[in-house]
Image (cartoon, rainbow, N blue to C red; front, side, top):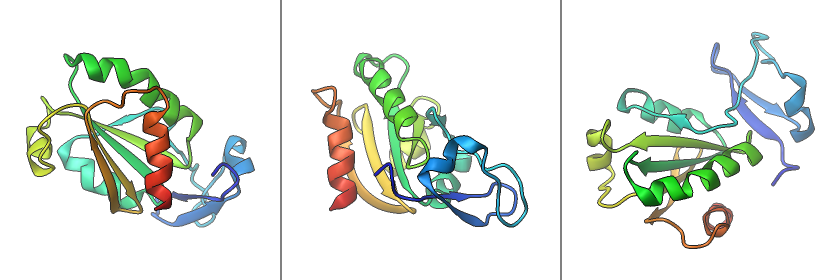
Length: 149
C-alpha cells in the first residue's frame, strides 16, 4: 500500500494530482495551479455541512468514525485511530463525527452505538463496523481486508 501512487485533490482548483509515494515529504504542489497540496496526518473533525464534500473529494481510502467525548470505548480506540491516520497519511484519511454535535449525520447513517466506523474509497461505501474492535490491530486489518475485497 505504501508504494502505490497517491491521488490528492487540490483544495484551490480541484484538480486531481497523482504523486509518487516517496514525494509526500517534499512539499508537493498542484500540477495545474501550483498551490501546496495537503493531506491530513491526523483525524479531521467533520460537520454535516462538509461531510459529503470530504467523503466525495478524497480519492483514496476514507475512514469515518462516529464517536462521543464521553464514550469510554471511543477514548480507548482513539490512539489506534490517530496512529492509523499518521502512518497511512496520503493513503487513508480519517474523519471523525461527534454524534452529540451532529445528530443529523448519526441519524442519516443509523448509528445506534459508538464507535461506529464506515470505510469509503473515492466516495464509494465499502464497509461498516459497529462497536470498538477488540484487538489493537483489528481495525487496521479490517480496513485492509475491506479495501481489497
